Image (cartoon, rainbow, N blue to C red; front, side, top):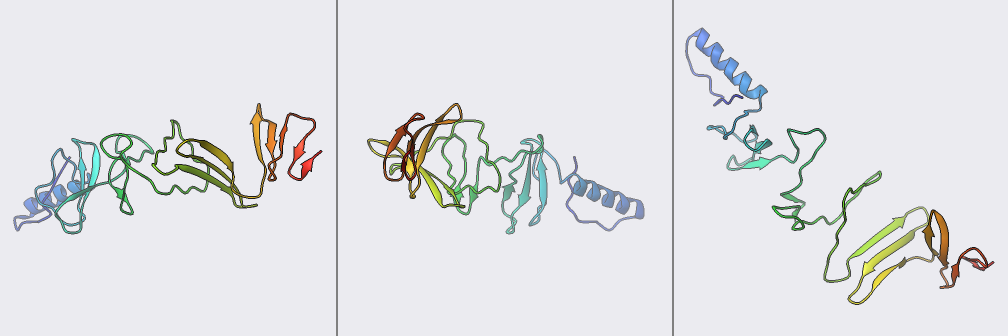
Amino acid sequence: MAQHDYVIANASGATVRADINNMALAISSNNSGSSAPSTTYAYLWWLDTSANVLKLRNSANNAWITMPFSITANNTVDINGGTIDGTNIGASSAGTGAFTTLNASGAVVFDSNITMSNASSPTILMTDTTNTLSLKMFSGNTTANIGTTTNHALTFFTNDAERVLINSAGNVGIGATPKVTESGWT
């Protein structure tokens, strides 16, 4: 752990070299310490060892910005505070932050419950862009709703087998025979 004021004072050779070595140590340790460096500069890094976070001095050199990743665990990102595009994300208590959009090019896995609440019909909309098929789930004031918002059938599965199909005309087929298909009864 080392911090430095980044000013090399005029002195004898050995003293200057020691000062340069101390400055290099501060740089290589990200100015680590349990308290902020006494001399700060815009964009100065500080590894706050009391909170185990990495901080960056802002451009006005009047505040620290806490970086959103852990310095004690691999592959973790802490998004329990701050904003993304002006929207609060997380806070000191659960459920006080918000995301407006979550985009992913691969699978998104949640290892806990997903809770959505909104005074005006919280909605989950999933769209397969190949055939523009959209599944919509939402809750209203007095009903829970699930269905398609496009001209496609809705099926219900158990044990990975289709058990109920509602085609786009509203016909309902239950079980194997007779079977209702997207185009009608078979």
